[in-house]
Amino acid sequence: MTATTRDQPRTTRRPFRWQRVLLYAILIASALAFLMPVYVLLITGMKSFAEVSLQSMWDLPKGVHFESYAKAWFGSEEEGFRGLNVNFMNSVYLTFPATIISAMWGSINGYILAKWKFRGSEVLFPLLLFGMFIPYQSILIPLVQTLQKINIFGIRFYGSIPGLILAHVVYGIPITTLIFRNYYANIPTELVEASRIDGANIFSIYRYVLFPLSIPGFVVVMIWQFTSIWNDFLFAATITSNPATQPVTVGLNNLAGSYIVEWNVQMAGALLTALPTLLVYIFLGRYFMRGLMAGSLKG
Amino acid sequence: MRRWNWERVVSILLISPAVVATAIFVYGFIAWTAYASLTKWNKLLPDFTFVGLSNYRTLFANQRFRIDLRNTVVFTLVFLVACLIIGFVLAFLLDQRVKGEGIFRGIYLFPMSISFIVTGVVWRWLLNPGSPQLGSTGVNLLFDKLGLGFLKTGWYTDPKIGIIAVAIAATWQMSGYTMAMFLAGLRAIPDELREAARVDGASEMQIVRRIIMPLLRPVTLSAVIVLGHISLKIYDLIVSMTGPGIGFATDVPAYYMWDTTFRGNHFARGAAIAIILLFMVAVLIVPYLTWSTRSEAEL
Image 1 (cartoon, each protein chain N blue to C red):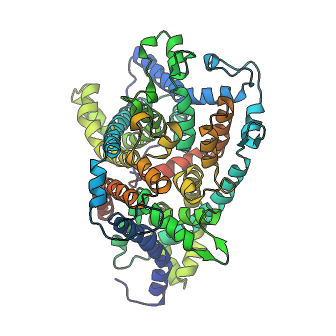
Image 2 (image 1 turned 180 degrees about the vertical axis):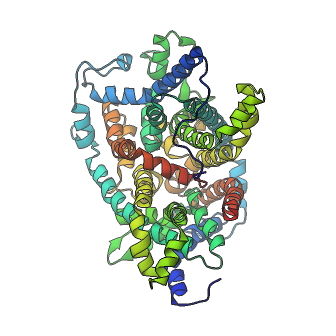
């Protein structure tokens, strides 16, 4: 698919004018429909507490207020709910190390599977990939049982950020390996052969030939892992039960599930939770697309 | 096959951590879950007394599980069809030399970067039907304002269509992704094919039906696989948007599994649900994995 993909729109004969009008009308109407939830999210979060009512939920706010954001972030002691600040930072401490470790690991796996094929590596590859499609429910019970037993150098893995990092790194193997393998497969093997003649070995080829060419691959993989780890809920909710160690998605779900929390605070919390991945999408959207396409295997 | 030397040994050593981790955390854990599903372990403390398929028999006789399976079918159908149609139409329109294509693409695709938890929190409010005392809220209120009051429904509070309301939110999140896949597929079709058909006097409609659609079949298959396995695994969205609902109107196997395992301590029953889920996903994924890694090897 990659070889023939055009970045330029195709050159068709220009249809009649009214068709163009209809075309743009449909595209714009769809865009508005896609943005509708964002509109509600933004205006509700900005409204003052006095202004929030169900009847006026579609109306623009009368002024810009940030009280809802403050309340969603810090919580409210008198009303008795926790803010998202601790959870948000937990997600940061979880996502960054997990993303970096799994990108490094995936890069090495991809290197071997693309440039050091061995007997059976063609069979091994789909066996590795299968792990990214399984419903994680099918490994959840043993995972919890195992994490409860692991205790390395006094670090507890059940109910802790290290446990979540471990889960995300291990279950990230298929997608990171897939993206890097496809990426390295596109780097000419002649390059590897040439450096072998110059006396390079398996390590120095990686270090001096492949790795310096890997930046785009790393960007794609890291964006993918960042987004999926930040957005994960299943592992987070299963492995961590103490609110002090829970990531932000679980925090938001608790916040929104509580009947005492107002809608504007919920919406502010939702936006805070979505913000990091939204920013990544806005600024690195091109790479995000490539990651998505890799996720569909035939990219 | 190259001969054995120290580098081949090193290459095997470098890939082996991933192989061992996958062997344990994917295949080993699945086997463990499968075994647990055949035991008596339906209380907190493990009890590995073998009971054969009795957990499965109980499940298939269980009213909740039957509703869950029905919900999965309805959800999958609505979600798949909606994503494919919206995705194809948007991609087709965007491929007509549209001004501002990048902006439209960005708007359709951004929901993909957001957590299902955020989507659930926002859509729970949007599709909140309101009550006779308070009047309409959310989308119902919008319908009222636009004079489309006849479209009002109970959304996820209506046991008959509850699961469809969840599918709408999921479609909002994933149809842009489907659009991106179709767009990549459309861009891979050479212009010459269409031109040749036009020269032969084919109408635009015929070109779409006879040339474009057949050539998009592989992309459509990929989309069906990706969307299908997402819909079988859907869990986060249910948690944050509706929970199991009244009379399990919005319950799905993945939710039931978590609920019965980690809240109800019915580990064996949870394991059985997980294995059934895995089986459904495998029916979809295994042929696809075999097909796509094989056709890749042929290239």
